[in-house]
Length: 357
Image (tube, one colour):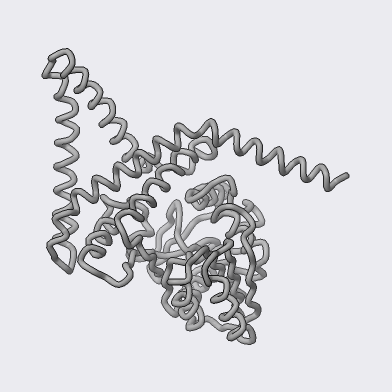
């Protein structure tokens, strides 16, 4: 079977070279592989690195295509890649990833065994480890700090899941269910995978497949990422609430709980009613117990121990608050987001109408 390996990137000059070296070292036959590289209007040397890779390796592959993402988000980038790919299997790989040399080969084996969509575990990695970065890595790798998504941790055997990262898809899947929804950002894979399952396909996670994702290297970048993830969970409610899990809203409910019980406590201080502080104290105490317990579990199961790990409970709290506030902001923005979608579709329909004339 022929494979189209698709990568999109924007300003990824620091990491994309290493990923392309790993692409070049794949064990799957190059004469059955197409490389599709999509640049999302990078202002650094990302596109130059793509072009150099193409110049040096174009005779080894079916084709190496360098495309430009003219849209505004990841979904438009993936759609650009898919529309231009010619392979029987289309594999999606993030720019911040690492893939072992048998990555394509293992995906093809699973597809050839009868699956339509597959992938594997996608644990985290950190760049240039320092004690502080390793503490951030521990927070991101923990189920308490990130999510319960099955692909974040390696599992035994083969199982069917609701979503996958760095997925491999038979071309016919996109022909039947369509491409990524370009109205969405960061949750575009949740929505696509919901449509895939609704169409009757299964998403297979195999322990034979593994890839890695690099975490954000600073606390600020991690906070920004969590806020953005949470915001898109909120916004996605008005597009496809069915593709979201109740677990996506746990940080949001925690933030709402803090706001409500905090408001009651403030009212209690105004009216001199000390019992009104109780809900806030109970909520904070329960969270603190869970936070400390999960910190101990994370530290005790970590192969490395160092002083920065004492900050892990604070980091957990900051990440949860960031995500929860992001979801709250996203929900507040829903009316404006829906209006933006309506205007975008009207503009597209107007363009189509002009073309028809």
